[in-house]
Length: 486
Image (cartoon, rainbow, N blue to C red; front, side, top):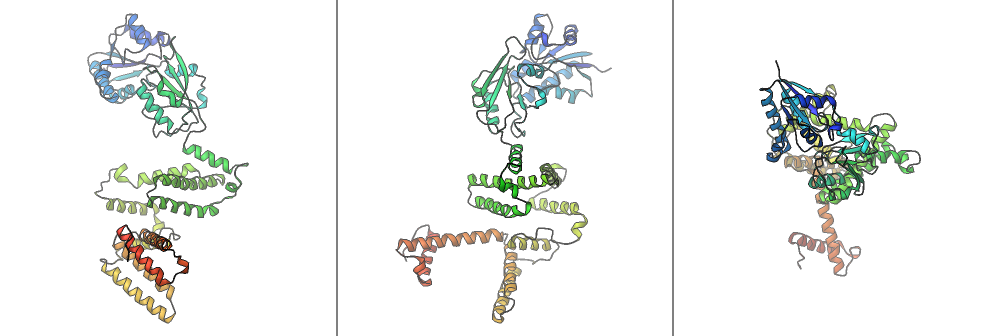
């Protein structure tokens, strides 16, 4: 016969919040454990003559709550092997914000009978202490689970057991990442007892108050919370009747130039290592995604959640070495797996052609992707000598085309294509290489103009030979970091 563990809830306050069934079970039992003596109901029970043992010493000795809860589970397991019935009582409701109970159910329910008894939770008292109707929406988060939890500000946020000013400080900082600094917050202490206190403060003042193990923090709904939901709301407002005339006129087609422009502005911020500007430019790029999603929503084509669902599924499915049991040794194997999975996903579509990427890519990028695609089946040079020879050959053919006056553009394109191939063998990004070369030229030209101006001359009034004099000076300045007379 299996021993039985009764998991009871003590309610949020004293004996008056405990159910009669729980009260009788505790007084009649031989072995009763409470998670902590630091609870009004436990103190009332002790005065009633109940025989209780607590796990407070585990909290005093443990380095983490998880370690404490593991010790509690092991102790209860030991006691259940000795006794037919054991009681474990926790503050509030056993199924609300009780990590120790979750572990007990997970680890002991197969070996023993584990019965959870209903009780009044701290939420019942919260709903009366604060003018809060849960129909408005309620989000309950532990103090250490606020970061990255997708707060939207559309619902009441309840944070139980904020038991110290140190914890309150962490809560404040986490919330101020998304809520305005002056957003209202409500601190409830001694919930459900005659000493109950409800205090309203500004969020930035949160950790200036006093806290104990019976303290709960609430944050009402707030329209200015920074979230993806807020961004979607703003975009929806701009597109709605009475919104922005320009935004209302846009279509997928009219937005195409802005998507390209914003993408390149992100690249520029990265190249300049300007993190402040990168933040802004990534926001502008994200706006394009939200804008297109809103247009699709209005046309009933797809939703923003479909975008999220697709990319989440793709990332998980194409990273089996992270989310599955596939083993890889390096990034090359990761890319091989990625392409193989991609082929499986595309199915028959892949068999229709080799070049399954946008043909409207910038020319250098299009050339690179094309060469990589054919190289996968072995259509490639064995080493870099091949592409070097090909560059020389294409230059000769261009010279011949120039002499004949025919096929000049075609031969020039062949040179560029051959150079891209050489860049691939040298493990260089041709797009990035050309951009750096352009910037190098721009900087040198600017320096040349500056040197001429400092010498009382303007480029517009100079011959090519005179400009070349300053060009060479600019090159020397560039290499040495300072101007050298020549």
